[in-house]
Image (cartoon, rainbow, N blue to C red):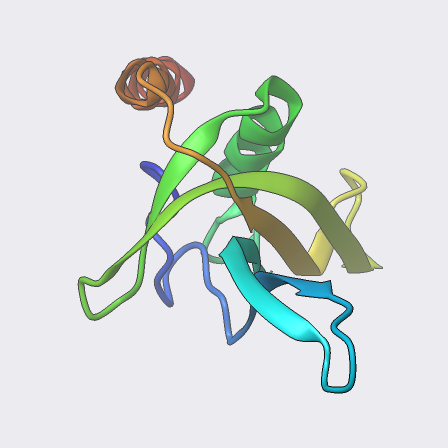
Length: 142
């Protein structure tokens, strides 16, 4: 889950995930020895998701557009893995989509996507963003 967006095999799917995480360590020169090292805290933590959707057959384009909107707003969204483990609060920094086998409406029969998320501190109004998204989703279904 990314915020209120459920990732599953239907309609919005992801078939690969890469996670990179780091720690910030400051080094200090010392006389006659190795440089000293001091842990400064958690470094960058990024998620890279990739997958494909079939908009004309099973949908998924609405969810992809919702993620674009979250990215444009700079929303900090809770991310949860499929086994229920909460990974933290992330912001979407990059979305790439490739439309293949274009249909008459200009949308690809197959849409491959990749989404990059970066861990950010949780924001108090994050719950309001999820509620706002849910209201937008219900308006889109009318």
